[in-house]
Image (cartoon, rainbow, N blue to C red; front, side, top):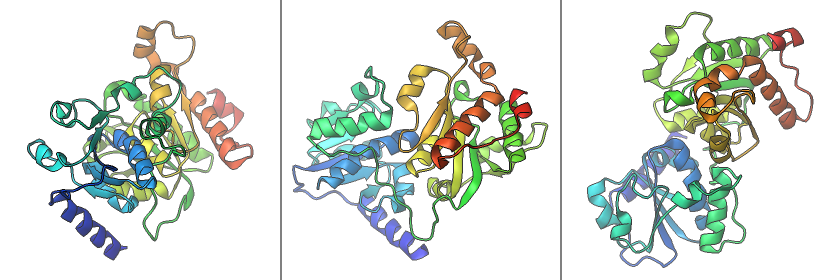
Length: 332
């Protein structure tokens, strides 16, 4: 595995340090990835479908580069510096990024083949981002067999859901308005452990102090130095529970069943992890108006509701009833 990683690093690092071929095929595209993990994994759906159709696909992005071993069919380089973008991208017939002006601004002003997915992201339809991006690939590039997949596959030596009883919980998110109450995550972990499941929290190193100072029994805290190491751990986990975040999209992309807590239905429709089986938990219906839902969504989602939703998810995945905790515990 170490040799494979070294070879992959050499391939992508070498590509990242060179200009692309001067005479690229008309069926060639450069993908500029967002710094956000979830955005990256979803946009890679378009890149994967073009690759399946025989296109030359070159990907530029930090998360994608860190996960290059998981995408051996794509050419992946580190993120482009803004000052280098024009020189590198000019020869590509198509340059594709998710947002119009980030991470690279005003590419459309000088590149005739620039494509962004702004309208796809904000279109009014009930599909999640993964399905929207697959549909976009099919419609824009006439791919009649587009798949809702980014082609992610594990390096050698890993075993899918090896720790079947391990529930990976990500209690953090990019912004505070996406985070459920910490105390309820702790209570959830205790109930899951009482049901015979192994619970571990995954947080960034800079977030650990926020959890270590909380009172109560804390499950093991995991932090990883790279997206690749996080992916290895998630791939061998049995389940994922978390807030709306890129880590949930990574778990889903790896085939791990997910349960995601959202503050609003509209956000959930667009941003629920969509690569494999997953469910969502929304604020209670009794919270009136959008403003109150935004303010009180955390309090309206009880631990009992999350436990019940997780039980339903397990039943769907295993095909049999999942008894998670006693009825007395669920009523608490």
